Amino acid sequence: MLNSVSEQLMSDVPLGVFQSGGLDSCIITAAMRIMGVKDIETFSIGFEKIKDH
Image 1 (tube, rainbow, N blue to C red):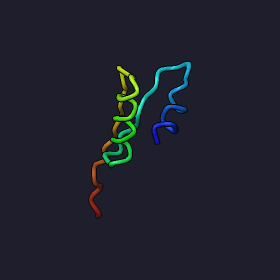
Image 2 (image 1 turned 180 degrees about the vertical axis):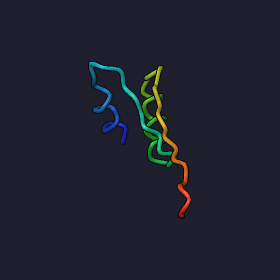
Image 3 (image 1 turned 60 degrees about the horizontal axis):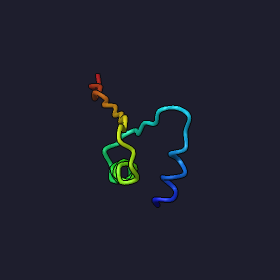
Image 4 (image 1 turned 90 degrees about the vertical axis):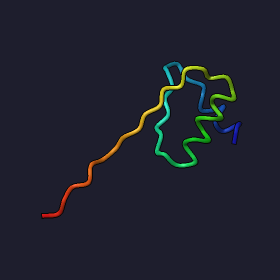
């Protein structure tokens, strides 16, 4: 798994991680940190439940 994450870290632009709140995105973010990425931009979106009429 670390090899797959490492391959995705090759970029000419700043990297970011979309945090879904699940285990997968947390592990990927932790792997990036272990590999020495210091400033990790993380993003998360919430949705308000729409009431049925």
